[in-house]
Length: 315
Length: 184
Image (spheres, chains in turn blue, orange):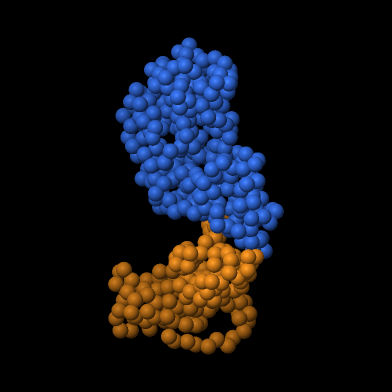
């Protein structure tokens, strides 16, 4: 497949880097102000080196990516809330041109799922978005294999930063502020960690899951979300007295989406440590399935994008 | 409220256990008596009856909660006999206070009257506080945390947690709930 990659952040760059390993070719890589374009296949190494050195991917206008002869648009621009722009328009353009779209950007699938499916229905192309939920962990493809109708609920830990903070607080008896700045020093938490610690990032993923289970109908405003900012170290100590700990847990069913700090058994499956993520899928006929792994990171998320590309039919 | 004292040793019969049965009765004379007969006929010992006459279910019936005691192997027979007698059994087998849950409350616990918060939980969530552990590292005027272990009726944990959530909202407390269901 020929890939046009929008977004040259950690995920976009890794997709470009790994594409050839998966048997695909990159014809465009864009950042917010420029694009590298080559219908005969980009020299990915040279493009990434230029991006590193000069800060821009190439000399062409980002718009030019849509004019290339691509099969799959990889939407890896930053997640935006509300109208999910410009990501939504990118997907719309590609579908209207009868091309496939693979998203790593959570915005359009969380906030405008129904519209995307309508556009897809009128297109020869299709959309996939494994990378939006749980990074490298195969979550959506597992649900697809179980068939969404047979899945009753999905729960788990889908934010590594919040999980890291809670793990450290419990292990070291430290307070939230202290551990947060440590996480920022380590590069685990971003300079502005708001969406990670207030539950928004995890909520977007559970909104996407609820949309998959119900075939649409949910957006972020339907989720009941609370974060971990008000959890003191003493609360984790109290939980430990009883063999429990606190994790930022999300739950998605066909009825509701909830994300918030929850008491879970200290040695239970859901109490993953550090930046690890875990997803538990409750099925009607097969009990509970769990998979755990790295929920973020450039190469990790890129593997999910490229697996999606591999699942697409030829156009 | 009708109460009957129980004097048998609970172990003499291979162990009797308490059960709660929720029934819906039509508002007609004699209905209650008719509904109770299958219980004693099948070896159940009536502990208490809570007859909410002022309360009407969406179907226009009167909810009645009956606590009985019987050997576990007889309980299914009792429920079956009730249903055979045309009594609408809403929920059976849920033991009174058969479940325990832990919640952690965080906030100005002392300043917002902790004992009042606990009584509100007992009343609104139909729970009994089994124990409480409090941590107030910043002193009683700062943010403190409390772990509360509660006994609640089996099968009613969702309702109980919803009640605790709304108490938390009223008092601006963070409620850390247990994760129910699934293989946590």
